[in-house]
Image 1: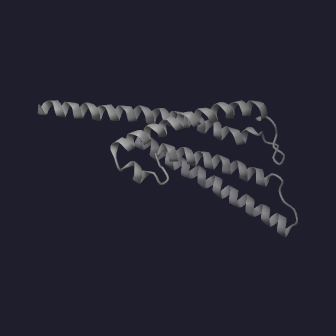
Image 2: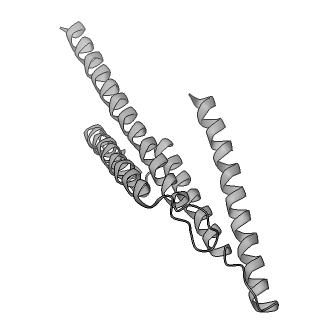
Image 3: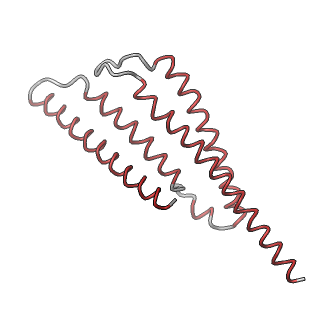
Length: 168
């Protein structure tokens, strides 16, 4: 599992680097074109927005995979019950939000996904697909989190019961 996460991390960094550099170069080129040559590329802002949307959904999903929380880690580590409950809530929320994003993103994509964007003439689905893919991933991460949380909790509970029974 660690090897898979390490590989995924390298792929993520590569994709984010490519998206970030591409967006920077496109925006710089568009600014030079606009202010130096008096013309701009009509497709530039759309492409940068698409790169941004894909990058953010990838980065958010990776944060969920790595179980990174902003500002909650110190609270969670205070007590095992708080840790158990927060992990359960986290898993349920991931499943719920992932389901909502997947279902409604898919429905919205079916309605307008083939409509071309004004600047690039690319399909609108390029803005919607990362949300749908992320929603599926979030559901999977949430289910995995719930299963491992219950497994760890009950295996610790059984170990404590066995230890107490041996003492009597």
